[in-house]
Image 1 (cartoon, rainbow, N blue to C red):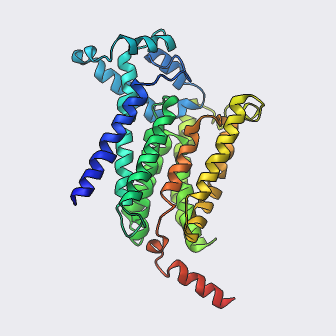
Image 2: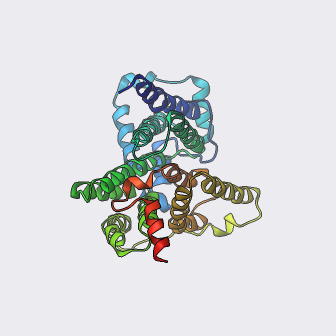
Image 3: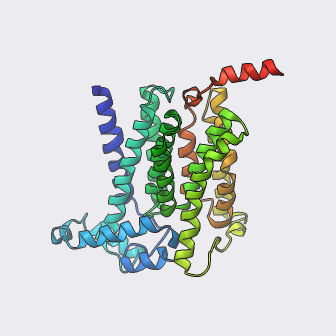
Length: 354
């Protein structure tokens, strides 16, 4: 590995994510969601509503907290009285160690996410990216994800990481000429990602966008989507049946009226959505990548519609999976995954036939 690559992985893949997450957790104070900085408040909030289905992130947070709590040496790891006071203003039962677990989990997964992006972009036959493209695409995404920590959660950044790693394995499958182990790995990762957060459905959107852009509406790739789709729905529906014991709870109380109201936060949320889609459509410069991104957005519409009903548009983090997906598509070399003809060759053949 070249020295420039080692430096890039160290500075951009490891140090920068840890530092920016530290700044967000210990130099800013989120007032968006109170009473989640102690175990009792955390359980009350994250074991109810739609959050109770995002089990892996929640259980990882609780497991790590109890493991660290056993270490007496960690009891003195504090950032100072001023940083403890800010927590008690938001949660009377706040535990600085419990809060630290937010930083540890999101810091570690932010590093894994950045390293995953750099590793993905380093496939030179897959991406038309120079060193600057790789660095600044990863940095901008890392910054955007850090800003969204104004809503501290135990599952968002792990979900983003699984979106990247699953897409990477899927691309390896496309290049492998139907390697069965990679099919199994892709489906397993989709299953795990769904247990973290239901936004894992966008992994299916990424896969479908590539297939559709290369092959059009054709049964040959639709049947290849069957197993990944089943993996998602088995996890999605099975988890709800398990959590609810006897009933499958598909939807929560609708937030549509809130999102479409005349409140300042609702109107700002609509402007955020408009700007996000503007950025997504403007990301790619090549015609084929523009088409690929448009198809990806098309396949994400069910997720987008659900944001209006069960999320709040002002929560910028809800749009991050779409931005992350677009970042992995806007410079993707589709010809590297077309086993029969290049995209340009296919276009020439279709033109000749017509």
